[in-house]
Amino acid sequence: MGFSVNLPGRTAHEALLNRQDAELRLLETIKRCIANKVKCDREWAQTLSSVASAGNKIDRSEDLSGSIVVQTWKSVMEELDNVGKLVKANSDLIEKETLDKLSSLCSEKRKAKKMCQEEHNRITLQFSNVSEGDVIFLSYIGCSIQPNAR
Image (cartoon, rainbow, N blue to C red; front, side, top):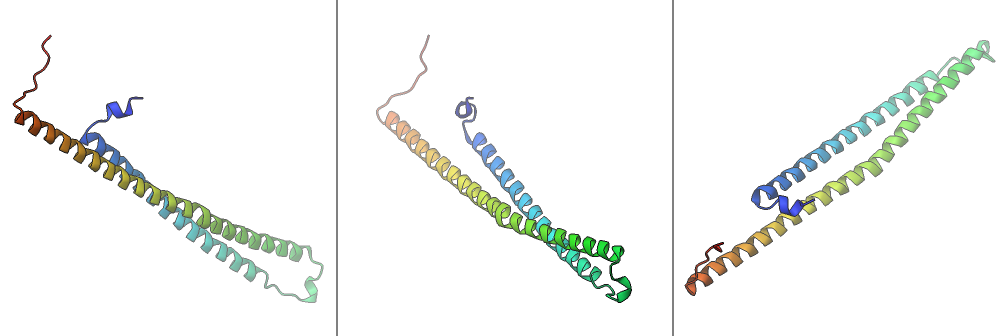
């Protein structure tokens, strides 16, 4: 693939850092969106449960005993409450697993970026020291580097 051959120098390093920054921003945006979805799902689940609770407060008079309409209504309200419970359980699971994993991924990305910067700085410093040392040494002994004539 030639990755190291095709990306030498400061420009390439800056491009890699820009890519890492862009990915981190995207991950943070994803995290915020998922957190917002979890919040909305919880509110919706609570609203569904409230609606089901209100719908279950029906007149329990003798006139309605054995009514298919009452039985159907109770069934609808139970299912509505069950949907609310499922939505809440799903939002809890998303928060627990997905958001935790995204947070870990963001943390790992930040560490990788920091290590990349530190390693680049170390290599640049080492190269700079070697280059300066070579120039000083070559000028000290009176040598000049000339290209090979062919």
